Amino acid sequence: MFCSGKRLLCLALAWVLLAHLHSQVEAASSFDCCLRYTKSIIPSKAIVGFTEQLADEACDINAVIFHTKKKLAVCADPKQGWVKRAVRLLSLRVKRM
Image (cartoon, rainbow, N blue to C red; front, side, top):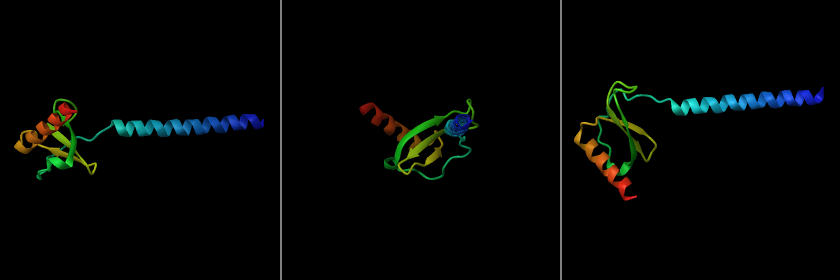
């Protein structure tokens, strides 16, 4: 009888752990879309990477999402000159690596 209680407790703890891990994976895989662009120019030295958001996929607008050293995600208009320059600089950095 005591042994089955331990098994039940272990199963319950394993279930809670799996549920927690599953919720963490779902939270990491879901994302928010950019709905508008920043009005500020982000200095290229503050940017560590970028991703592109395409309107024909899951979101309404095309955007470049810059990832900063402060771990911020900043939505920018891909048609703006400063955005094109920043993307070009980041792409060159990657090619040099």
